[in-house]
Image (cartoon, rainbow, N blue to C red; front, side, top):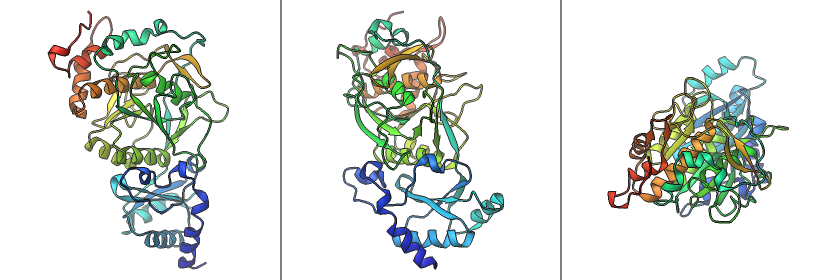
Length: 408
């Protein structure tokens, strides 16, 4: 087939692959933006190995991009697996299937030398930070939330409850039917599957509950910021047969699409309870988010050195060996199917910090990421062991006349 014929064939195959909820150009759903053409997408689970390569090229017309993709695949003997725009950093991404190429390293060198290609990297895998399970809890009560008390969140909620602050939870799927989450979950997007998953997943549901479970509904638990607006951005998936507590998987492809949506939508707080290797494409997107005033919180991980993206300057690293200290052991939270359970890990610490960030932004909307990070650090109580004090953090950003007694 000629390059031109292949280009038109690719264009003709695009429409059946897409459904509105999978947002072929997620930013097109944002107010004031014109609809973008449908691009070739794929389920993230199917293109997660490092045998796939992600290329970025300059944005152009759909016809020109289709022709460029056809020329690249024909020249280098690879197939186009997926493509999508990242308007947040003004690039177009092509995913190439190089699994059957005889010399992947040589192919990478050739692609990097091609003047039509801006950047090229292998597809990388990331993991949501494992949640260590605790005993099931079938009678959840506010009094059982010792982590919330240790964070001093109840006193902080006298000043702020996170009202109106959107928190993007980049994770696995949040249970939209959970009685403590349905009211708070204002939007959900699936960047993993072309047909959005209807199944709730354990990790994302637990993280969402810690950040913003509804208060005052006579059931369940209370989130750190119980009036925040949760935006579920599914970029990770629970491995088949897993509980989700031992972790889940994400990829450069799914995380990039979720970050692109978050940046274009100006979501003020992003929670990334996940980690993996340094990734140039994701770093560029995170820098774009930070430059626009987004507060980005990520899990330190369970090692002495922080995982990416917690290691990136400007990102607030939570929990782990040396991140911002917050409760992360035996924390009661929401579980799929309307349940509750205890979870642990630096993922949990990140969720607590994201909730406190929402409290601060609701109390002082003009607060920038650097000032917010300073307020969090200034609010760490050193004894009996270091821990973030949510009440003191909010007190750092409100006028002295509004401050409340945060206790000893």
